[in-house]
Length: 614
Image (cartoon, rainbow, N blue to C red; front, side, top):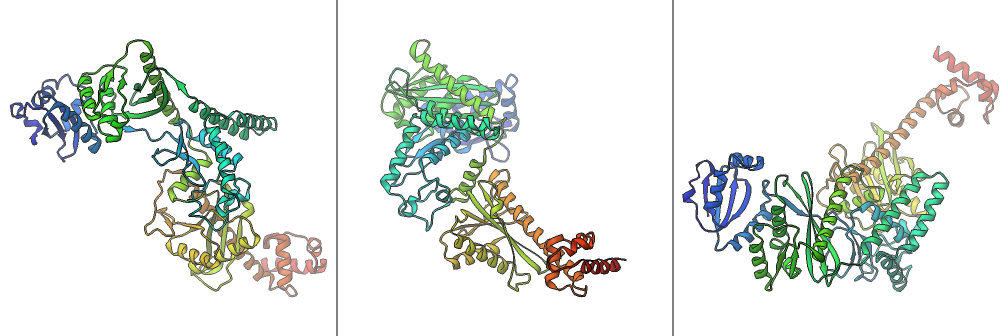
């Protein structure tokens, strides 16, 4: 291994042996990694072709200050080393190629006693069943929600029966789940419902489609076009599930088939997995930084990424034949390396006609479909409410989807007229029936912690006595102190596990009970925007009530000076007119119609207020 300043390269000093070369910047950053059959000849080509090089290569030469070389025994070893170094360092002048993890699958945890069904972007060998991949996560998720609701599938993440909550969540109260988590549904009954969903995910969606189409027509006939549009998306998701799970017999034997699609800076390589003549899956890789790179180089880089830097599992899954859309210079070298690593012959083949050429066309069509979908997603809006809630569940690592969220805030004016608010959001939208405000009874002054504890205690004591669903997530407007006070209050009520989070202002840090460090959700995340909206609504509601009380106190002080107007009459006037200004604008007869008043009393009140104003 050696390092040579780029502006003083002495080509004869470079070895003729095969190996890997790395261009480094003045700061030591690796800019580019390449392999060579002869290091001296390869680097010489950079210098001799500098005038005719592409813009990217000229920029690389401008930024490079040093060349580092690593000598290996064979060209095959250089190929493998290059692939691993690119994966480790991700040099910015190499083609950036990454596994496309954004295409979701539906996962059914069939190995669990009470299986869960949810969307995931990671496939593991855990005994679960996976359906997919799908390109439109929003539509598939909405369709899956309809299927799960119709079959009573739980949305929580508890590891049942070992890990179970103390009470059912909101899904049970609204009829979406029979609550196997607390023993209200047997294992056999629940498993039969899961089996029904698996049949649908396997492609038998006709009955559900008919049901959704009927609902969509009813929504359209009643002019509820927003609901009709949502159901249209559900239908599209169901159609995607059906299409994805249709077994496609493509002929031939065992092959990996690679297709390319390009659109400016964005490029996609799609690998179809064909086993026993049946298409069983698809892997995709997204490539950037390849605008002026040939198709042949993209194919070579895709092969290196998929098979040379993916560990032993990639080689174990490699079939005896890989079909390519175009030839490239190092095809024979790649073939020899893959054969040696697999311990059996692996053929890299570029078919020109017949069934194998049609497989290439199918792979290219898949790559184009993925690329078009990616471009379209970049031009359309973000996820729906369900996806925001699932995103929040992921960020906060919640056991249940936070469909019912309650947020608390405390407001006072220098310790006076201390009030608290509790607002609820149901499925991401304000649920006004669950709004509460209260005057803090304790003489806590400026002690926000004790005021918060009182508010949480009173709210949940009443909620528990009413027997309705409790919040999936409780948000506190404040920091660690307010969070601790709320937690102690809940523990004293012994209501079981209720997830608590605090959202601090300005820095928007999220504090969770049980976590030592705060959590920062990306500022662009819609789940953070939802938390901010809920927090701001609780603050608005608390401040509004505080101002109302202070206004009433001012009114009472003026009305209390009127002879014969005691506390009860003051309250009656406020209840009827709402403000001192409205009382002044009333007539004596309007005041006289209030129980306990007379028109003469109305004249007396108005005379007093008018004389003081004058």
